[in-house]
Image (cartoon, rainbow, N blue to C red; front, side, top):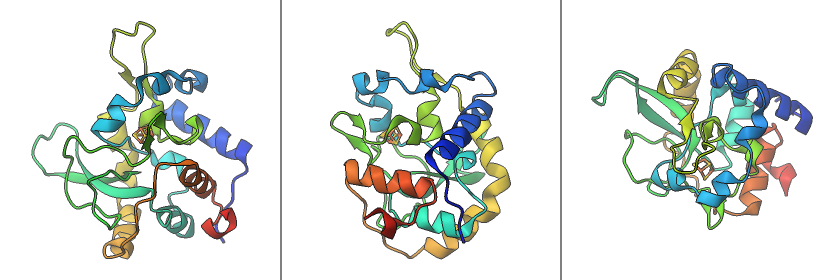
Length: 207
Ligand code: SF4
């Protein structure tokens, strides 16, 4: 049986994930959670969805992973490894689905821009801040609004994080390669189902 995390347990795990993924540069995660993203209404989210860290998932728990993928919120997608500018070598990550993604949650093509995230609502991301993927949370706006956001969870860190889990990701790709799952709408219900699934709750129990 899959593990279920209480909200405090989830927050503690997420906080640790943010600390490690920012290379120990952010030990007070509150700076990632303010309303600054709401003010800009997600200009980066319109370009491409952010990426989860395997540290924020129970990646080795197959039942947990299937439950979270069944929500239809996430996709498994290829990314070009840092330092390579062609399509190879690729590795796979898990990220929210985008508007141009296929009906299956396994995406077979590398990045194309713009490719807006399905979780972007009229007022920015529909997820409560702590449930947003690691890249999004570690894309921290500067104090000076004229300067660019700092990307703490960068390509190199993402690669280091995901490379050891490629076998599990490929197993999930095999399970889901032909499974069509409708894309959910960017609304509160989707945010609730997804956040509960992140904590290991079964979808049926969320209704
Ligand atoms: S999950 Fe939220 S923060 Fe991340 S790209 Fe989508 S809308 Fe933006």
